[in-house]
Length: 304
Image (tube, rainbow, N blue to C red):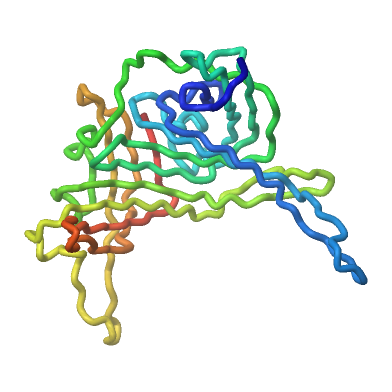
């Protein structure tokens, strides 16, 4: 009987020949970038040209001790050093009544020459620790194979207790305080390069310097009056008076159930406090949250 639907168990995604273990979602968007041409003397459109197609693939996974999507795509390590790595991504679909996805597939599509466009890591107090990567490319074809995901993985999904605060290096404003969420994100801002005689771009370069953002949500308790909603500062209208924002190191480590380091996110020693916000505590009963956002440039190394 033919499929009537596709749901979580009937499709899977692989990157560079390896299935994404713990994948939570996958999205595929194709844009043909139409450009309209008109001519003098007629209202109707003269031509509608497809300039060059874009394929965008979004994959998210629960962090579980298995290789990150970033590692599958690039081998892991520095964001800058691996910025130009390209990947092959396969999305496979099988019958909705099968127990698992396995070749030969009912249908599959392969995207080649895919660059990482953005990445986001979220470590919340409620829910799983997650990773999301967005890829961009210009090639898509029918066919491909995805390896069957493991049935009984040895690793376990990481939760709030797996953020190893004691071994991490946190900035002064949040160190020793109760955190409710940490987020790390970077947008590589890809731009296309073209050559005559070829429709597709031959390269998608990163606009350096590459900005990386890390934010910390703190559960405010009112006991830290000196840091409530951020550091205080005097009026800065006088001559030769400015604000000195110190650069700090940030390293976040996640551990497995045995306390062994599973992932390390090293943002280097040049992180600067960009913004502080104070919100919540309304009459609906919500708690006050302080959010401290830091930025750094070109420094993010992910190891697992």
